[in-house]
Length: 162
Length: 108
Picture 1 (cartoon, rainbow over the protein chains, first blue to last red):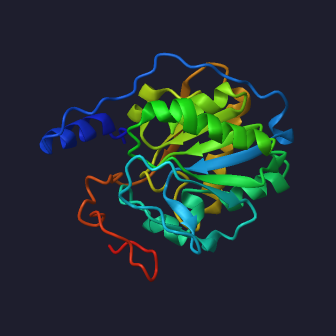
Picture 2: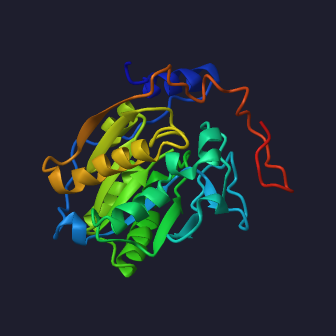
C-alpha cells in the first residue's frame, strides 16, 4: 500500500478552512553524530509526542497549540499508569497497549537481552503536534531537552512522533 | 519532532525517528529515520503483539549503528494489512472536545 500523502491532505484541509497555506519546514541536509560505542553499551532514552501523561498527572490538552510541556517518565513505570489525550490521532489501540506507540516494556526487554546497554532513567513525553513556534524549538526548547538527556548520560534516543 | 531530533543530534546524542508520515519526515529530514506504513497511533503495530513491537523497535535501534548517510529514511517491510486511516477519516470520532474531568479521558 502506498504511504499516505499527508502534505496534500493537510494543504487541502487548510485551504478548505480558508486558512493561509501551511508553511512546511523543508531541510536539504542534516548532520550525524555517530555512536561512540556499540549499541550494546549505550544508554537509550525515548520521546513520544503523543499526549501521554501519568494518570495521576494533569492530562495533556488534547487540542493544544504551541504546547511546550515536557513530562519526564520513569522508565520503570507500569504500562497501565498512563492516560492519552490528543485529538489528532487515533489512540484507542495505545490505550489498550501502550507499547504500540511507546514501547517501554520492549525497551526494557532489549536492555535485559543486552541489545542495548541500559534504558535511561528518564523517558519523555512532550513536543506535541501543532507547534508553530519552530524557532523556539530550535533555539530554546530542544537545546534544553538535549541538556536533560546529557544529564542522564543518554547516548541515543528513539523519537516517536504522533 | 524531526526538528527536535536535529538539535539533539547536534548535541552529540544519536537519534532515530520512527515515522508513520513518510512525506512529512522526508521534508523535515531528521538525522536517521525508519518509516512504518501504519496509522499514526500504531507505529509499533497492534495491541498484544509484543513480537512485532520488538521487531520494529529493534529495526529502528539498528539504524543507530548502521546508518552512515545523514538524513537516511529506511522503509520497514511491515504492512498494516488494511487501509491506513488518518485523522481526516476519523474526524467524527476525534472531534475536538475537552477531556472528562473525572477520568481525564477524551469522550469519543
